[in-house]
Length: 116
Image 1 (tube, rainbow, N blue to C red):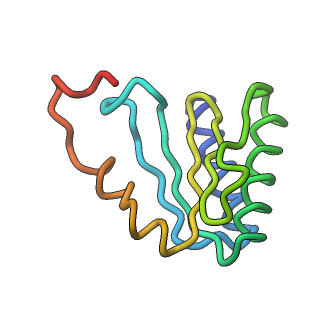
Image 2 (tube, helix red, strand yellow):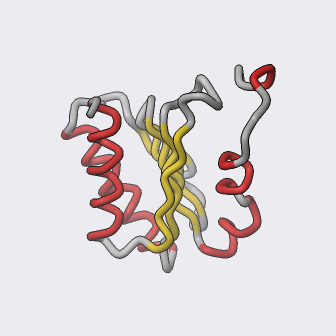
Image 3 (cartoon, helix red, strand yellow):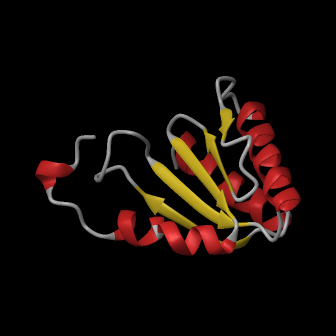
């Protein structure tokens, strides 16, 4: 396994241990140049979402991704943790359903549209 795949498993485990719900990992390697993986999870409250995002950020930094950061700090319904080659979205379930990122990124994308 490569380092990013290992890190993906660490982040999924961290989310699971901290009671995130409906954790999904999407392989973006052949779909986009913005990242190798996207992980999507749900939190049960604004405090839970904040806590999950901080736990993920801590794990990324502990594993050598010092430039990682949390986007959406003002939002109580969504956080994005930018781990460069690994993007983690943590949503309130209603917001997650509204944006449907799993559906968008799980579908096959024609090769011409891969470059973002």
